[in-house]
Length: 180
Image 1 (cartoon, rainbow, N blue to C red):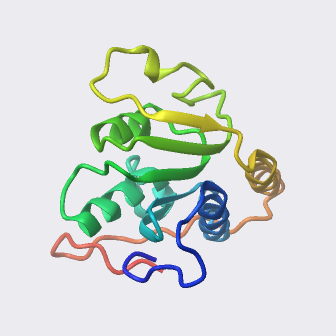
Image 2: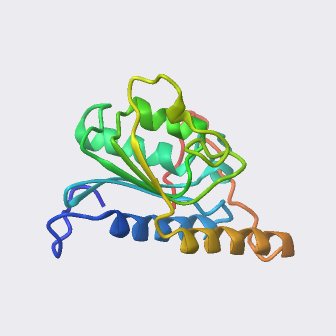
C-alpha cells in the first residue's frame, strides 16, 4: 500500500483499484465482517485502504471508506484529497458519502448498489443536495463480483457458516491493540 508505487504501472486505474478493494472485502468477510473494501489512489500510489471493521471494533463508524479516507489524509498530510480516486465494493452510505464530500474526493467508483443505505442513487442521492463538493460517481464497476461476495457472505451467515465476528477490547489506557 501507500508509499510504494506499483512498479508495473504508471497510473492505477479504477479497475485495478476495485480489484484491490475486492481483496480487502474478502479479508473482512474472513473475519466475520460485512465484505466491503475500499481503496483511495492518486496516480500510481495507493494512499489509503480500508475494510469494514464494525464488529471487530464494535464501532458504527468503522466503515471501509472512513478507514481509507483516514489513511489517505495521513499519507498526504491534510484533509483535502483532491486529485484522488476512491474505489469501494458497495455504494457508500450517507455517512461515507458525507466524508467523501468533506475530503473533496473528486472521483468515486463503486461496485454493487445498496438499496438499503446507498447515498449515490441506491436509496437516495446526496448529490442532489447543495453541497460545496459533489464528486463524479460511477456505479457498477465490477458489480457482479462485489454483489457475489456480499450475497455469498449473507447466505453463509444465514447457514451459520461464517465465524462470529472477532471482538477485541480496548486496553485499560483506552488504546486499541494493532489490528490483524
